[in-house]
Image (cartoon, rainbow, N blue to C red; front, side, top):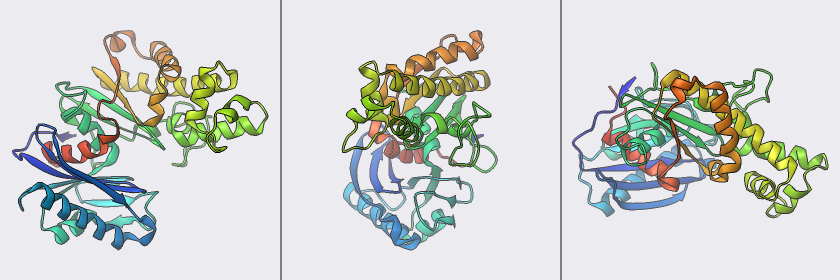
Length: 325
């Protein structure tokens, strides 16, 4: 369990590292984005090239914002990683990233203190420090994007386990005979309500001949969460059944989290969450069915207030609420 105590810095430099885009920013303690830019990650160019680009982005953000040499950098990165040791063990969307000592290499290149955090845990911190979770000591964040990530704040602390890898909420199984997940397990929340899993099911429905409305709503023939949502909004039975299945799985997982962590709020972020009530209605029904009533009372299910800025705010939050003992 990591103490998320506030530091004395007035500004933080932040890096949001993704497989496609590399975002950098300077964020004040009050939440003002002083400087922000993004560039392609060019992940296929290899580990060294990406790290050099991150260092360049840090230097540019510092120069443009006037951040002094003692201003630390928060780096929100994907994949299983150890924030204590500063190592990214594996990043699925970054080819060749195996046991990369990202923190130490960036510190050598920039001369700055670097704090490394899992992107989903960082997003939870971002909502806690700057977003809708501000002032709330017990909250859960779940990001429904390409995959499903999350983070838990309990009594003002980020729960991330012995080596900083805790909080993999998307890989909690809610159906032992459910679909195979990319992590190798079965029935994970991610295998039901991530963008890739909804797309996978939509493709199966379309190929079976039952997905005419979904295919009609597709953009350039590509089916996915938006097409499913649009078809469901017209009352299409196949699309509604898909979202009911996804929402029930998600709600079952959230009910488990409620029973374990007793949160005040659950924050839902990511593109899939934008589907709205067609997904959230079965979520609420599942919570009512599986969460202990006395635990579920008063828990608010709320959308992320940071939206597309969650990664940037999350990386800055690693500095303002240090992710290290």
